[in-house]
Length: 226
Image (cartoon, rainbow, N blue to C red; front, side, top):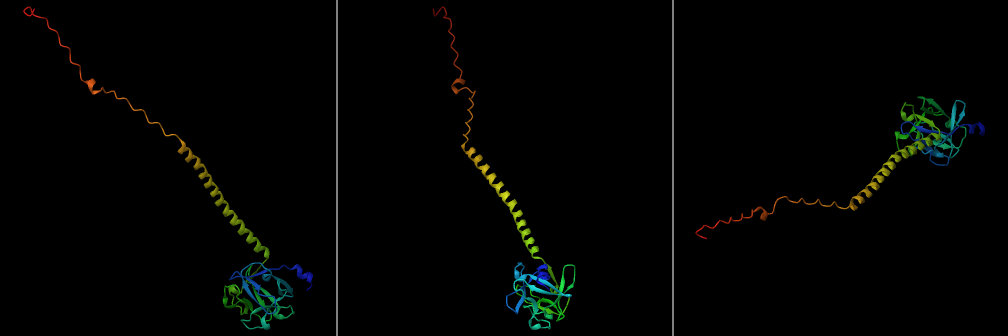
């Protein structure tokens, strides 16, 4: 396989179906453990599939080394590692279709499939080979790094859209408060209403109610008096 042919292949993330975590090389040296880790899209999580007949080599982008098995082991429970590409059968793998999306990763030399030690969920849990038991922990999918970037972009856009109504609501509230302040000031500055004029009473004063005594009539003097 020439370098030109390798460059035509696209690097991919290899993601476990049960945990949703990516297969990652945990160091740069030969014999470094390969484990699962949260998706980041970093170089240590990217693998270049290089076809070799019906099989494939998986070269790690960060190290340039191949996915291999420790000591070329074939027993169930043998851990996965990275090692220089030596063209050995322990570095050859085959994809075995399970669904349109997920596949098993079968080691050609051992005849066993890749899964995670003790069905662990944590970051750093080592990858190993085990007998094929049709478990979801033995199923993997490949994804381009661009998919991870697209998800991150969608998440950012969704967060931005959620923030817009909150800003609008805050602006509306500020506008209401701004309008309320002048109204309150105007109410405070407005002159107090003048008191209504008191109605004048039509009742006469008590003194006026007492009638003046009628003048006495002057009588005519009798002749005797005269």
